[in-house]
Amino acid sequence: MIDIRFLRENPDLVKANCRRRGCRVDIDRLLADDATCLALLREIEDLRAQRNRLSKECRDRPEAREQVREIKDSLSEKEGLLAAARDRTDQALAWLPNLLADDVPDGGGDRENLPLHEYGDKPEFDFRPLPHEALGERLGIIDTVRGAKVAQSGFYYWAGQGAQLASALFFWAQRELIGRGFKLFMTPCLAKEETLFGTGYLPFFKDQTYRIEGEDLSLIGTSEQTLVGYHAGETLPASELPLRYTAFTPCFRTEAGSYGKETRGIFRVHQFHKVEQIVFCRPEDSPLYHAQCQENEEYLMQALRLPYRVVDICVGDLGAPGYKKYDIEAWFAGYGDYREVTSNTNLTDFQTRRLAIRCREEDGGRDFPHTISATAVTDRVVCAILEYYQQADGSVVVPEVLRPFTGFDRIRA
RNA sequence: GGAGAGGUGGCUGAGUGGUUGAAAGUACCGGUUUGCUAAACCGGCGUACGGGAAACCGUACCGAGGGUUCGAAUCCCUCCCUCUCCGCCA
Image (cartoon, rainbow, N blue to C red; front, side):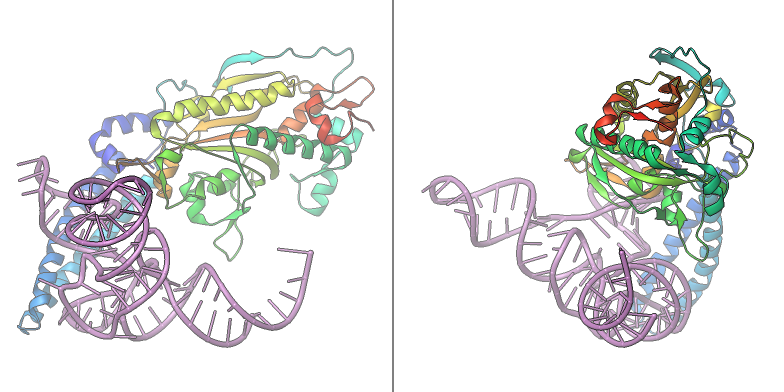
């Protein structure tokens, strides 16, 4: 949420931001509605003050009651106008995207993200490497057919050694993050609209959300929603920041409108699994912790020995709540290209404003903390492992760091 | 799912129509005093929004939303949540 006072004082800046992001909110109309609200608010508060004063006299002076009644009539009329104007401003404000960091690259979509650096050597094969879906099928560890039978196309099973490998990865990643100061949670996998709105998923990604019929509940698209929402309405002592939270949850996305886009394999599915990193920090510290989360992500990739590159996300690919975002794209040997496996976003105070999460300094000063939301690992990382570690005989070697958790060092058909 | 109880400030807890934004206690902050620890005493101590250079003023807030009334924490309606007992259950 953009601070309405910031908008009043910097309309041109917000307009420029909207233009850059292709956001169609009419700022002038928003400001006009806001001015109406302020004017009405002043009138209403004056009337209420009069009413309160007069009604205290009513005991001794019953004739004052008639005056109060008149005030009430004009009050309720103005209150109606205020409610309508406020509704319009809230609506517009809800759709206003976050500001952008100065150095966000231009660009209209994911093709124009800016590669920053690469790590690791792409593997050389003396055979033709397979994509993960082919490997998964041959090894009997990815079952999309039964996923579709039991649920729907876009769902799948990890089976046998594949499920063990995935579990090992997720468990290992959680342990690593705990070792880096993160507090582990197991969270609800459903959340109410307020929570999805507060974390910026609504209204922007409404069509990506599975909603439970007849309930104010939706399946979470990420544990970011439940981990950030955890502190909704709270005031955090600044001395306790940063708070680092992690959780492993399933993530549900309808992927409406993305049919035909990367539909092969299990790269884009309705349910995936993710270990998440969330940081709440003082506003001035968010670039620091954004970098720290990035370092954590890269550390995990490096420990797995997966080649990857880091890309700086351009305007067109940066979601409305984001201020600055980096993705890690792992090398998918069978696919023959880099593909997104994790992302790391500095959301500044966009979420904390919506969720009314504040921090209080020792001296009593209050502010909205910033949040960082970064992936640690997902199923996509398992896919990258399969493609990178595949062998000529069709087996897949288990990355060394995961062997203590899988109990085997190779997946065979 | 059935029956009952309840939601007031950081916490405990008074308050059933009129200077109650809310007693009291506790916690916290400042001060005084007493060898230390501690205690005693005095003072302060909610949030948000609006106005103001500021002091400060106004408005709103006692789970949420409506209603009654000149006036609602207090009365009425709806909803939400929590707790206890019973049933069911991983």
